[in-house]
Length: 242
View (tube, rainbow, N blue to C red):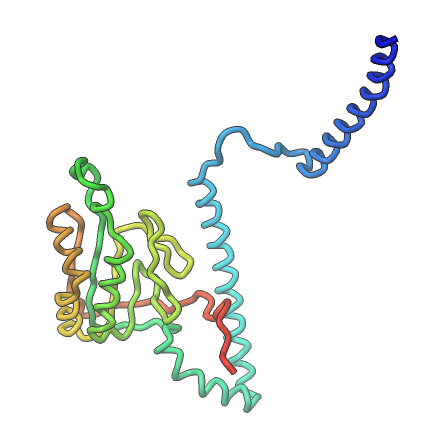
């Protein structure tokens, strides 16, 4: 009798288990759309970053093209619309100071670089690279010295720009840069040099440069050419107070 009960129990359970397994397989096939849900091995992070950078570059290209179209349409509209012409008259004086216009003039070039490969292996690796605080100290000193416009590695610095290091690279205006970091500033050379020399953060980096072999050079330039800022200028989260 017990054997008969077991046989009946299995006859009931086996179809139920098969039905449940079928449902699981069907859901997996639907969610994966025929692809592997879990790729063997780890994803190559470097390839992922490069692919993301390519997509960002393509999006930047489209945005720049659209911005040019908007500017052309605005100029055309101003020719026959008094309201547009007046708005342009109010905006035009602000384009230069806001960094939306290419500029040139005398100034300084400051270059910061990591220590060369093969530097003393007994030293903490963090002492051999340029840090966010180092770059920020240079930028702050140049602004304090009277810089009127600035760029790092060819990327224009504006009011919404943030100098932020991620690992051994610089993240600026949504773009990634590797050392050496070339800081170009237009402004009075003597006051900017004085501010660099007086900055505690810059002094610390100079000491590290001489001790660990990092790169630090400052050069006066008779002409510095800076590009216009061409990234989005609207704030994503901040709103004007009422």
